[in-house]
Image (cartoon, rainbow, N blue to C red; front, side):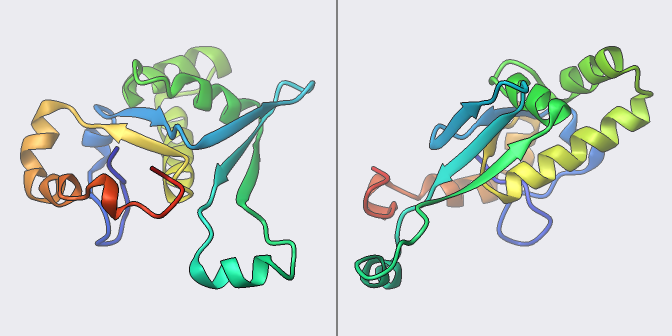
Length: 152
């Protein structure tokens, strides 16, 4: 999974490229469904060395939790690795009676927020993989041994 960020730590894409990308749920996210239809997402964090010491004395949270509203929940469920952003925009237009612009803006906000929180990753189409091949090669250099302890 590649990160999409506005800073130098990830791959930058424009609005047209964003529509071609396929979002996928981070497999490290635990999902809790509520009776209201909303869902809660918890990304399990790996304790750092500093946190390890303090966790012996204090109760240290092991993850971050966010609760998605109806639209956020619908977006999350569509991040199944089959739907491109453009497909999700079309779905939102139909489901919520939105204009294309409104749907694009809503989806862009969801993508940015969930990406920043590392709750979703992205499958890039071939054209974008070629365009960003240098950045992707840097991601590919990461091995299982480079992952924090407990994530392997």
